[in-house]
Length: 425
Image 1 (cartoon, rainbow, N blue to C red):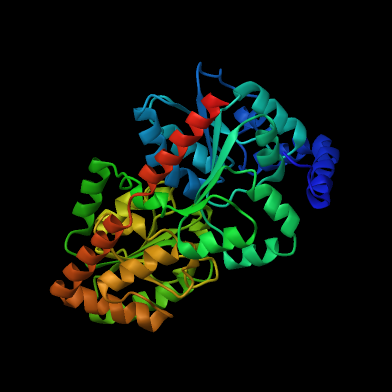
Image 2 (cartoon, helix red, strand yellow; image 1 turned 120 degrees about the vertical axis):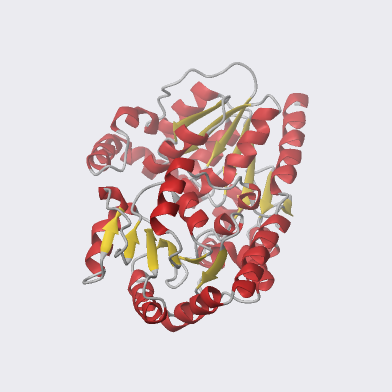
């Protein structure tokens, strides 16, 4: 590994100097529910589990989205007999991994990006292969892993236009970090070109791991209970909404209620803690909140599903969904999750996080782009009154999601080459 550029050296020494303050910061985060108090030591690089014998493949993702994207890859690796360690940085992702990781895979909280914490982590786990999911470019973690002899790949790689512009101001740092990876597997050609422009080598387009992810799960008993409660009522689902979007969906609900008086709108906030806020936004509309066991009664107009990990339930209850994070400049939530469950998709103009998937789904459906309340209401009315059109949209969304697969196999091939190269070294 060549010497670090000045910017990365400054980052290394600054994080080392700030290390004594990290325990206090973690305790403060734990008090706010943002850290698991029982596992805070993992954030300092102190493992809570023993390292399994043999070759270990380490997969790191920041949060829920990245770890969920990696699940199909984890399952495929475990089936080959590989030992897999998954790291992530959020409490929610840890809970989901506890429920969904296959036997043979372990989870730990990712160490904070200080030299000491990263060193403790690497000295204990000694992974042979490290796969960083999406856009996780933590300098100490990446460069220290490389210095410890870990073969690295950036998989399911994503780089927004904004991030690309930012890294262009630090070209030497960007090049050094990207060249620590033996391979970069980009989600699409646009991302691949950005990585190459920043100095990455061995870049290939693999597609999105999320296209290979298994369908989101749902509790069959709970699904049956909600289906019975909803009955034949028409449903408008707004999934993973962000602040500012519910204020658009609720007026669309009001417009639709004039045509469909028994319409039920389901709001699933991206962050469940916003449940009380959404209940307040509902005003005089009859509202029930899932987190407080509010029932879906005959007069319930809006159901606020402010819980974690239940989107699979609601995509099965609704024939179409508005995807949040798309009317505000967030980049859009994953449209492959509803599409894989035969749920048609609507979204705003901000869909750059999943541009290829949205373009493919909208092309197969023959529409789906919305710009505000009027569009949401108009498309929902068309779909609710035209069964043939609704069937075509649902079938098109599912078909597009199926055709985008293949990233897991391409990633497995890269991992096999890295393992062979490591063993030959």
